[in-house]
Image (tube, one colour):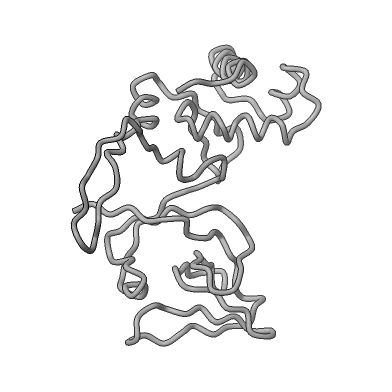
Length: 200
């Protein structure tokens, strides 16, 4: 996958730093090493390199930038041929198009992680046990969005989000289940769902 000149400089800097020191650089060290004035610019380049499958980054530890070996890169950056559209109603003629699609086309430059679904609370949204949800990392959500919520600092759940006064209603999409209603202060939004992946 093509990268910009500046992204190549950032990638080369991270790789050289790791080889010299045995650990990855901080954003401040990248900014200093490449004479970049803004940490936001460094973050943008790192995120783009991650989305292109050239580096991996752990969100729960510092100095967590890992340059991926070429085999991992191609595996992560694989594109699938987009062969056209298919009807789920009346049959239509399928015409091959010389197009392709990758996860990067769906998630763009957003910070996204995947979670495997356990349980049936969202089955009426066609999100079922064993599916993978693609989640954009964010701490805010609009009414009715499907979110990942940390409840009471202990339990995470996948539900539709509704703010009702000082309370939050986390609504399952399963008529057999009751909503979770808690004070807003006891809910931390960790992300919102962008899409699902299902393996048959």
